[in-house]
Length: 438
Image (cartoon, rainbow, N blue to C red; front, side):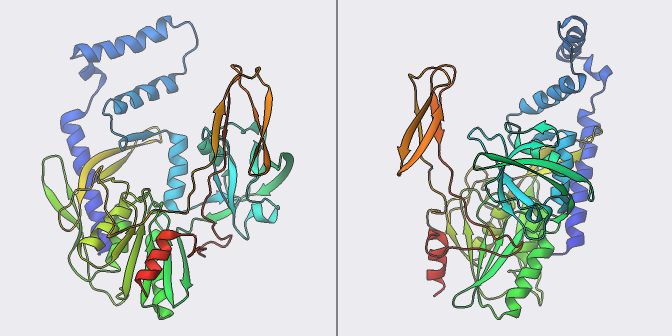
Protein backbone atom coordinates (compact mmCIF):
# COMPACT_ATOMS: atom_id res chain seq x y z
CA UNK A 1 0.00 0.00 0.00
CA UNK A 2 1.32 3.45 -0.88
CA UNK A 3 1.76 5.26 2.43
CA UNK A 4 1.40 8.69 0.79
CA UNK A 5 -1.95 7.71 -0.69
CA UNK A 6 -3.18 6.67 2.74
CA UNK A 7 -2.31 10.06 4.15
CA UNK A 8 -3.99 11.81 1.24
CA UNK A 9 -7.15 9.76 1.66
CA UNK A 10 -7.27 10.49 5.37
CA UNK A 11 -6.70 14.18 4.69
CA UNK A 12 -9.41 14.27 2.07
CA UNK A 13 -11.87 12.67 4.47
CA UNK A 14 -11.03 15.19 7.18
CA UNK A 15 -11.42 18.07 4.75
CA UNK A 16 -14.80 16.74 3.64
CA UNK A 17 -15.95 16.65 7.26
CA UNK A 18 -14.81 20.24 7.78
CA UNK A 19 -16.75 21.42 4.74
CA UNK A 20 -19.85 19.56 5.91
CA UNK A 21 -19.62 21.22 9.31
CA UNK A 22 -19.31 24.69 7.83
CA UNK A 23 -22.28 24.19 5.54
CA UNK A 24 -24.67 22.24 7.73
CA UNK A 25 -23.73 22.39 11.40
CA UNK A 26 -21.60 25.47 12.10
CA UNK A 27 -23.50 26.68 15.13
CA UNK A 28 -22.83 30.12 16.59
CA UNK A 29 -24.61 31.76 19.50
CA UNK A 30 -26.83 33.66 17.09
CA UNK A 31 -27.79 30.38 15.38
CA UNK A 32 -28.80 28.92 18.73
CA UNK A 33 -31.27 31.72 19.31
CA UNK A 34 -33.20 30.74 16.17
CA UNK A 35 -34.81 27.70 17.81
CA UNK A 36 -36.68 27.17 21.08
CA UNK A 37 -34.30 24.37 22.04
CA UNK A 38 -31.25 26.51 21.35
CA UNK A 39 -32.67 29.38 23.36
CA UNK A 40 -33.51 26.96 26.19
CA UNK A 41 -29.91 25.75 26.25
CA UNK A 42 -28.56 29.29 26.61
CA UNK A 43 -31.27 30.03 29.18
CA UNK A 44 -30.29 27.05 31.33
CA UNK A 45 -26.57 27.94 31.25
CA UNK A 46 -27.41 31.54 32.19
CA UNK A 47 -29.79 30.52 34.97
CA UNK A 48 -27.24 28.17 36.49
CA UNK A 49 -24.65 30.91 36.61
CA UNK A 50 -27.17 33.35 38.05
CA UNK A 51 -28.92 31.27 40.70
CA UNK A 52 -27.03 28.04 41.54
CA UNK A 53 -26.19 27.97 45.25
CA UNK A 54 -22.68 26.59 44.89
CA UNK A 55 -19.67 27.74 42.83
CA UNK A 56 -19.74 26.50 39.24
CA UNK A 57 -16.67 25.16 37.47
CA UNK A 58 -17.25 26.73 34.05
CA UNK A 59 -14.86 24.36 32.25
CA UNK A 60 -16.60 21.35 33.76
CA UNK A 61 -20.02 22.79 32.96
CA UNK A 62 -19.26 23.37 29.28
CA UNK A 63 -17.44 20.07 28.84
CA UNK A 64 -20.46 18.42 30.38
CA UNK A 65 -22.56 20.07 27.68
CA UNK A 66 -20.18 18.75 25.00
CA UNK A 67 -20.36 15.23 26.40
CA UNK A 68 -24.12 15.53 26.69
CA UNK A 69 -24.41 16.47 23.01
CA UNK A 70 -22.27 13.51 22.01
CA UNK A 71 -24.04 11.21 24.45
CA UNK A 72 -27.37 11.99 22.77
CA UNK A 73 -26.11 10.06 19.73
CA UNK A 74 -25.90 6.88 21.81
CA UNK A 75 -22.76 5.92 19.87
CA UNK A 76 -19.92 4.53 21.97
CA UNK A 77 -17.38 5.22 19.23
CA UNK A 78 -18.11 8.94 18.90
CA UNK A 79 -16.52 10.60 21.88
CA UNK A 80 -14.75 13.67 23.24
CA UNK A 81 -11.33 13.54 24.95
CA UNK A 82 -10.57 16.35 27.36
CA UNK A 83 -7.22 18.13 26.90
CA UNK A 84 -5.38 16.26 29.67
CA UNK A 85 -6.50 12.87 28.35
CA UNK A 86 -5.85 13.89 24.77
CA UNK A 87 -2.26 14.82 25.65
CA UNK A 88 -1.64 11.27 26.91
CA UNK A 89 -3.48 9.89 23.89
CA UNK A 90 -1.18 11.81 21.54
CA UNK A 91 1.88 10.48 23.36
CA UNK A 92 0.60 6.95 22.86
CA UNK A 93 -0.07 7.68 19.21
CA UNK A 94 3.42 9.14 18.71
CA UNK A 95 4.88 6.09 20.42
CA UNK A 96 7.22 8.07 22.69
CA UNK A 97 7.03 9.90 26.01
CA UNK A 98 8.97 10.65 29.19
CA UNK A 99 8.28 8.00 31.79
CA UNK A 100 9.65 5.36 34.15
CA UNK A 101 9.40 2.28 31.89
CA UNK A 102 6.42 0.31 33.20
CA UNK A 103 2.98 -0.84 32.17
CA UNK A 104 0.17 -0.80 34.69
CA UNK A 105 -3.34 -2.11 35.26
CA UNK A 106 -6.09 -1.20 37.69
CA UNK A 107 -5.40 -2.29 41.26
CA UNK A 108 -8.97 -2.36 42.54
CA UNK A 109 -12.02 -4.37 41.51
CA UNK A 110 -13.87 -1.17 40.53
CA UNK A 111 -11.18 -0.25 37.99
CA UNK A 112 -9.45 2.39 40.10
CA UNK A 113 -5.93 2.51 41.45
CA UNK A 114 -2.79 1.34 39.68
CA UNK A 115 -0.63 -1.75 39.87
CA UNK A 116 2.59 -2.58 38.02
CA UNK A 117 1.92 -5.11 35.25
CA UNK A 118 5.43 -5.14 33.77
CA UNK A 119 8.79 -3.47 34.34
CA UNK A 120 11.07 -3.06 31.33
CA UNK A 121 14.79 -3.59 31.56
CA UNK A 122 16.87 -0.45 31.42
CA UNK A 123 14.05 1.83 32.57
CA UNK A 124 14.05 4.09 35.62
CA UNK A 125 11.64 1.80 37.51
CA UNK A 126 13.74 -1.30 36.89
CA UNK A 127 16.85 0.47 38.16
CA UNK A 128 14.93 1.62 41.24
CA UNK A 129 13.91 -1.95 42.11
CA UNK A 130 10.21 -1.63 41.26
CA UNK A 131 8.58 -5.04 40.76
CA UNK A 132 5.52 -6.50 39.04
CA UNK A 133 2.56 -6.37 41.43
CA UNK A 134 3.67 -3.23 43.29
CA UNK A 135 0.70 -0.92 43.94
CA UNK A 136 0.79 2.86 43.50
CA UNK A 137 0.07 4.58 46.82
CA UNK A 138 1.27 8.14 46.25
CA UNK A 139 2.81 10.09 43.36
CA UNK A 140 4.74 13.07 44.65
CA UNK A 141 2.28 14.48 47.23
CA UNK A 142 -0.92 13.05 45.77
CA UNK A 143 -2.64 9.95 47.17
CA UNK A 144 -3.60 7.72 44.21
CA UNK A 145 -4.85 4.53 45.84
CA UNK A 146 -8.33 5.16 44.44
CA UNK A 147 -7.49 7.42 41.49
CA UNK A 148 -8.47 6.64 37.92
CA UNK A 149 -5.85 4.80 35.93
CA UNK A 150 -5.49 7.59 33.36
CA UNK A 151 -4.82 10.10 36.15
CA UNK A 152 -2.02 7.90 37.49
CA UNK A 153 -0.53 7.68 34.01
CA UNK A 154 -0.62 11.50 33.67
CA UNK A 155 1.13 11.96 37.00
CA UNK A 156 3.84 9.40 36.29
CA UNK A 157 4.68 10.70 32.83
CA UNK A 158 6.43 14.00 32.26
CA UNK A 159 9.30 15.73 30.54
CA UNK A 160 12.47 13.68 30.11
CA UNK A 161 15.04 14.50 32.79
CA UNK A 162 12.49 15.57 35.40
CA UNK A 163 12.00 13.53 38.55
CA UNK A 164 8.99 11.89 40.15
CA UNK A 165 8.68 10.45 43.64
CA UNK A 166 6.44 7.40 43.92
CA UNK A 167 5.35 5.50 47.00
CA UNK A 168 4.51 1.89 46.23
CA UNK A 169 3.12 -0.88 48.41
CA UNK A 170 4.59 -4.37 48.12
CA UNK A 171 2.80 -7.09 50.09
CA UNK A 172 1.16 -4.29 52.06
CA UNK A 173 4.44 -2.60 53.02
CA UNK A 174 5.09 0.87 51.57
CA UNK A 175 8.37 2.08 50.11
CA UNK A 176 9.26 5.27 48.25
CA UNK A 177 11.60 5.75 45.29
CA UNK A 178 12.62 8.87 43.40
CA UNK A 179 13.09 8.33 39.67
CA UNK A 180 14.27 10.42 36.75
CA UNK A 181 11.96 10.19 33.78
CA UNK A 182 13.59 8.82 30.65
CA UNK A 183 12.55 8.51 27.03
CA UNK A 184 10.19 5.55 26.64
CA UNK A 185 9.48 4.12 23.20
CA UNK A 186 6.31 2.07 22.90
CA UNK A 187 7.12 -1.24 21.20
CA UNK A 188 3.85 -2.65 19.88
CA UNK A 189 5.35 -5.79 18.32
CA UNK A 190 6.65 -8.89 20.10
CA UNK A 191 8.30 -11.79 18.31
CA UNK A 192 9.95 -15.15 18.79
CA UNK A 193 10.63 -18.36 16.87
CA UNK A 194 8.90 -21.50 18.12
CA UNK A 195 10.05 -25.13 17.73
CA UNK A 196 9.90 -26.31 14.13
CA UNK A 197 11.07 -22.87 12.96
CA UNK A 198 7.53 -21.48 13.29
CA UNK A 199 7.61 -17.70 13.51
CA UNK A 200 5.41 -15.86 15.98
CA UNK A 201 4.61 -12.14 15.86
CA UNK A 202 2.18 -10.49 18.27
CA UNK A 203 0.92 -7.03 17.32
CA UNK A 204 -0.54 -5.47 20.46
CA UNK A 205 -2.04 -2.26 19.05
CA UNK A 206 -2.39 -0.27 15.85
CA UNK A 207 -2.65 2.95 17.85
CA UNK A 208 1.04 3.76 17.50
CA UNK A 209 2.52 5.63 14.56
CA UNK A 210 5.57 3.36 14.83
CA UNK A 211 3.55 0.11 14.66
CA UNK A 212 3.88 -0.36 10.89
CA UNK A 213 7.63 0.22 10.97
CA UNK A 214 8.06 -2.16 13.90
CA UNK A 215 5.93 -4.81 12.22
CA UNK A 216 7.86 -4.57 8.96
CA UNK A 217 11.09 -5.06 10.90
CA UNK A 218 9.66 -8.15 12.61
CA UNK A 219 8.54 -9.66 9.29
CA UNK A 220 11.96 -8.96 7.78
CA UNK A 221 13.56 -10.67 10.78
CA UNK A 222 11.39 -13.75 10.25
CA UNK A 223 12.34 -13.92 6.57
CA UNK A 224 16.01 -13.55 7.49
CA UNK A 225 15.66 -16.55 9.81
CA UNK A 226 14.15 -18.62 7.01
CA UNK A 227 10.69 -18.84 8.58
CA UNK A 228 8.15 -20.41 6.19
CA UNK A 229 5.36 -20.83 8.73
CA UNK A 230 4.16 -17.76 10.61
CA UNK A 231 1.60 -17.05 13.34
CA UNK A 232 0.27 -13.48 13.60
CA UNK A 233 -1.33 -12.86 17.00
CA UNK A 234 -3.95 -10.09 17.04
CA UNK A 235 -5.63 -11.14 20.28
CA UNK A 236 -6.50 -8.26 22.62
CA UNK A 237 -5.54 -5.78 19.88
CA UNK A 238 -8.33 -3.20 20.02
CA UNK A 239 -7.27 -1.48 16.80
CA UNK A 240 -6.11 2.05 16.10
CA UNK A 241 -4.95 3.64 12.87
CA UNK A 242 -6.66 2.32 9.76
CA UNK A 243 -3.66 2.95 7.53
CA UNK A 244 -1.53 0.85 9.90
CA UNK A 245 -4.00 -2.02 9.52
CA UNK A 246 -3.85 -1.69 5.74
CA UNK A 247 -0.05 -1.67 5.85
CA UNK A 248 0.09 -4.86 7.93
CA UNK A 249 -2.36 -6.72 5.68
CA UNK A 250 -0.45 -5.57 2.60
CA UNK A 251 2.68 -7.36 3.77
CA UNK A 252 0.89 -10.67 3.18
CA UNK A 253 -0.97 -9.78 -0.01
CA UNK A 254 0.30 -9.03 -3.52
CA UNK A 255 -2.87 -7.64 -5.11
CA UNK A 256 -6.53 -6.80 -4.58
CA UNK A 257 -8.57 -4.62 -2.25
CA UNK A 258 -7.89 -4.64 1.48
CA UNK A 259 -10.67 -2.44 2.85
CA UNK A 260 -13.31 -0.02 1.59
CA UNK A 261 -15.11 2.85 3.31
CA UNK A 262 -18.80 3.72 2.92
CA UNK A 263 -20.10 7.15 3.98
CA UNK A 264 -23.58 8.20 5.08
CA UNK A 265 -24.66 8.88 1.51
CA UNK A 266 -23.93 5.25 0.64
CA UNK A 267 -20.91 6.08 -1.49
CA UNK A 268 -18.23 3.40 -1.21
CA UNK A 269 -14.57 3.89 -2.05
CA UNK A 270 -11.59 1.57 -1.75
CA UNK A 271 -9.34 2.86 1.02
CA UNK A 272 -6.45 0.42 0.67
CA UNK A 273 -5.21 -1.89 -2.09
CA UNK A 274 -2.41 -4.44 -1.86
CA UNK A 275 0.76 -4.09 -3.90
CA UNK A 276 3.43 -6.68 -4.59
CA UNK A 277 6.73 -6.03 -2.82
CA UNK A 278 9.98 -8.00 -2.35
CA UNK A 279 9.49 -7.58 1.41
CA UNK A 280 6.13 -9.40 1.38
CA UNK A 281 5.88 -12.60 3.41
CA UNK A 282 4.63 -15.46 1.20
CA UNK A 283 4.83 -18.49 3.50
CA UNK A 284 2.05 -20.21 5.41
CA UNK A 285 0.09 -17.88 7.71
CA UNK A 286 -2.29 -18.29 10.64
CA UNK A 287 -3.91 -15.32 12.40
CA UNK A 288 -5.02 -15.56 16.03
CA UNK A 289 -8.02 -13.52 17.26
CA UNK A 290 -10.25 -13.32 20.29
CA UNK A 291 -13.27 -11.35 21.49
CA UNK A 292 -11.05 -8.31 22.13
CA UNK A 293 -9.68 -8.18 18.57
CA UNK A 294 -11.34 -5.11 17.10
CA UNK A 295 -11.28 -2.42 14.44
CA UNK A 296 -7.98 -2.47 12.51
CA UNK A 297 -7.39 -6.02 13.78
CA UNK A 298 -10.63 -7.03 12.13
CA UNK A 299 -9.62 -5.20 8.95
CA UNK A 300 -6.50 -7.38 8.77
CA UNK A 301 -8.28 -10.60 9.70
CA UNK A 302 -11.17 -9.88 7.31
CA UNK A 303 -8.89 -9.14 4.35
CA UNK A 304 -6.73 -12.22 4.91
CA UNK A 305 -9.81 -14.40 5.41
CA UNK A 306 -11.65 -13.12 2.31
CA UNK A 307 -8.61 -13.64 0.11
CA UNK A 308 -7.96 -17.07 1.68
CA UNK A 309 -4.43 -15.91 2.43
CA UNK A 310 -4.56 -17.04 6.06
CA UNK A 311 -6.46 -19.33 8.39
CA UNK A 312 -8.16 -17.39 11.19
CA UNK A 313 -8.11 -19.23 14.54
CA UNK A 314 -9.69 -18.27 17.87
CA UNK A 315 -12.87 -16.57 19.06
CA UNK A 316 -15.51 -14.42 17.40
CA UNK A 317 -14.02 -10.92 17.17
CA UNK A 318 -15.42 -7.77 18.78
CA UNK A 319 -17.28 -6.30 15.81
CA UNK A 320 -16.19 -2.69 15.34
CA UNK A 321 -16.91 -2.06 11.69
CA UNK A 322 -16.91 1.74 11.71
CA UNK A 323 -14.15 4.30 11.26
CA UNK A 324 -13.80 7.62 13.06
CA UNK A 325 -12.44 10.97 11.97
CA UNK A 326 -10.46 12.64 14.77
CA UNK A 327 -10.84 16.42 14.99
CA UNK A 328 -8.67 18.51 17.31
CA UNK A 329 -10.74 20.97 19.32
CA UNK A 330 -9.63 24.51 20.16
CA UNK A 331 -9.28 23.68 23.88
CA UNK A 332 -6.61 21.06 23.21
CA UNK A 333 -9.04 18.17 23.31
CA UNK A 334 -10.24 15.92 20.53
CA UNK A 335 -13.54 14.66 19.21
CA UNK A 336 -13.65 11.36 17.36
CA UNK A 337 -16.66 11.15 15.05
CA UNK A 338 -17.93 7.99 13.40
CA UNK A 339 -18.00 8.94 9.73
CA UNK A 340 -17.78 5.69 7.79
CA UNK A 341 -18.44 2.02 7.94
CA UNK A 342 -15.73 -0.20 6.51
CA UNK A 343 -16.10 -3.31 4.37
CA UNK A 344 -13.90 -6.35 3.79
CA UNK A 345 -12.72 -7.18 0.23
CA UNK A 346 -15.85 -9.31 -0.26
CA UNK A 347 -18.09 -6.46 0.91
CA UNK A 348 -18.78 -7.79 4.39
CA UNK A 349 -19.95 -5.26 7.00
CA UNK A 350 -18.93 -6.68 10.36
CA UNK A 351 -20.16 -3.96 12.74
CA UNK A 352 -21.69 -5.49 15.89
CA UNK A 353 -21.20 -8.91 14.29
CA UNK A 354 -17.48 -9.55 14.28
CA UNK A 355 -15.53 -12.02 12.22
CA UNK A 356 -16.10 -15.74 12.70
CA UNK A 357 -12.78 -17.62 12.73
CA UNK A 358 -12.22 -20.47 10.31
CA UNK A 359 -11.35 -22.58 13.34
CA UNK A 360 -13.15 -21.62 16.56
CA UNK A 361 -11.16 -22.15 19.79
CA UNK A 362 -11.78 -20.63 23.24
CA UNK A 363 -9.04 -18.39 24.63
CA UNK A 364 -7.76 -20.25 27.71
CA UNK A 365 -5.18 -17.65 28.75
CA UNK A 366 -7.73 -16.00 31.03
CA UNK A 367 -9.61 -17.65 33.87
CA UNK A 368 -12.73 -16.42 35.65
CA UNK A 369 -11.47 -15.20 39.03
CA UNK A 370 -12.93 -16.44 42.28
CA UNK A 371 -15.48 -13.97 43.58
CA UNK A 372 -18.04 -13.95 46.33
CA UNK A 373 -20.34 -11.55 48.17
CA UNK A 374 -22.09 -11.67 51.50
CA UNK A 375 -23.68 -9.67 54.25
CA UNK A 376 -24.85 -9.64 57.83
CA UNK A 377 -21.66 -8.26 59.39
CA UNK A 378 -21.23 -5.17 61.51
CA UNK A 379 -20.01 -2.13 59.57
CA UNK A 380 -16.23 -2.29 58.94
CA UNK A 381 -16.01 -5.77 60.48
CA UNK A 382 -13.48 -8.15 58.96
CA UNK A 383 -14.01 -11.77 58.04
CA UNK A 384 -11.37 -14.29 56.97
CA UNK A 385 -12.17 -17.25 54.75
CA UNK A 386 -9.85 -20.00 53.56
CA UNK A 387 -9.61 -20.26 49.77
CA UNK A 388 -7.40 -22.97 48.26
CA UNK A 389 -5.65 -23.28 51.58
CA UNK A 390 -4.91 -19.56 51.81
CA UNK A 391 -6.62 -16.98 54.07
CA UNK A 392 -8.66 -14.28 52.35
CA UNK A 393 -9.73 -11.32 54.49
CA UNK A 394 -12.52 -8.93 53.46
CA UNK A 395 -13.95 -5.87 55.20
CA UNK A 396 -17.66 -5.11 55.42
CA UNK A 397 -18.99 -1.77 54.19
CA UNK A 398 -21.28 0.55 56.17
CA UNK A 399 -24.22 -1.75 55.44
CA UNK A 400 -22.42 -4.88 56.60
CA UNK A 401 -21.93 -6.22 53.05
CA UNK A 402 -18.66 -7.56 51.71
CA UNK A 403 -17.31 -8.47 48.28
CA UNK A 404 -14.20 -10.32 47.12
CA UNK A 405 -12.85 -10.65 43.58
CA UNK A 406 -9.71 -12.66 42.99
CA UNK A 407 -6.95 -11.64 40.62
CA UNK A 408 -7.52 -12.21 36.92
CA UNK A 409 -4.90 -14.43 35.33
CA UNK A 410 -3.04 -12.38 32.72
CA UNK A 411 -0.67 -13.48 29.95
CA UNK A 412 2.99 -13.06 30.86
CA UNK A 413 5.07 -10.48 29.01
CA UNK A 414 8.82 -10.26 28.75
CA UNK A 415 10.71 -7.53 30.58
CA UNK A 416 12.57 -6.99 27.29
CA UNK A 417 10.48 -4.95 24.86
CA UNK A 418 9.86 -6.75 21.58
CA UNK A 419 10.48 -10.22 23.00
CA UNK A 420 7.45 -12.53 23.04
CA UNK A 421 6.67 -14.98 25.83
CA UNK A 422 4.27 -17.77 24.86
CA UNK A 423 2.78 -20.89 26.43
CA UNK A 424 2.02 -23.42 23.68
CA UNK A 425 0.62 -25.95 26.14
CA UNK A 426 -1.61 -23.71 28.26
CA UNK A 427 -2.72 -21.49 25.37
CA UNK A 428 -5.37 -23.46 23.47
CA UNK A 429 -5.58 -21.08 20.50
CA UNK A 430 -1.82 -21.04 19.97
CA UNK A 431 -1.64 -24.81 20.41
CA UNK A 432 -4.29 -25.30 17.72
CA UNK A 433 -2.42 -22.99 15.35
CA UNK A 434 0.77 -25.01 15.82
CA UNK A 435 -1.15 -28.24 15.18
CA UNK A 436 -2.53 -26.80 11.92
CA UNK A 437 0.96 -25.87 10.77
CA UNK A 438 2.37 -29.38 11.24
